[in-house]
Image (cartoon, rainbow, N blue to C red; front, side):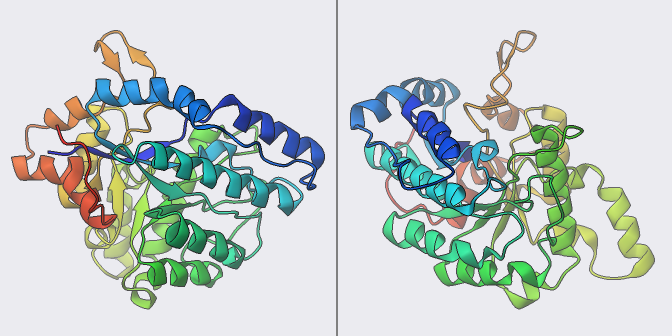
Length: 332
């Protein structure tokens, strides 16, 4: 069985972050040109990353930008566009060097509260030219500085139309946060929770029936507060809320058995993708358990209520089907 990690972010060479600093300092003017990175620089940056995959038993990862570095609220817009395109090219280089271990998931040059129509060309480039299998969408490109319409609003429809045209999934993942009262890791969960309800209380899936949406971090808070939303549907009418949840996909990027088991029981094993974010925020070592928190494979295998078919679906089958991962990968 091939283990596919659908939620992962790049480990770039240090020159990438040096370029980010120059880009911010220059205000995005052409003088801040991206560096030309060598294959050896990419390999050196990925050495420990690949070691962690081997240690955790992961065969294939879907790589995307590190969300809290995406700078969607930075000014001027030229910073966002230059940075996003460069990072997508770095992802493409990693996939090219290790095609049996990685696939690309694009970042988009979302800019504050402007129409996501400005992201369509980069999305198309990444899918058609670079061979990426999906893209991240940040539900709050203002990064806590203002209000952006929820994902159920027509504001987002041009982007949904393009995702359907390209036939790739949309991966909801919030990015940085500029509010002192809300650290970025909490902002992720809050915005993904808002995204779920906004989508499920809208007609998005009637308008775009082929749209495939994955929600990061196990669906934010929604599967764990599901009783509130079940009750609202019972009080005011509408589709059964549990059935609505199954219009979406979710990942296992939770780092706790309690959260993982509840997610699987609420939404079903057939709507869950294996995701770890290795290496990332969850890479703390739990001395009590004797493992890294983001070593999620044992947690899935230890869920006693799952059938062998369920485990196979979660650990690779669902992602293979959703992202159309037909190329050969290293099996274990």
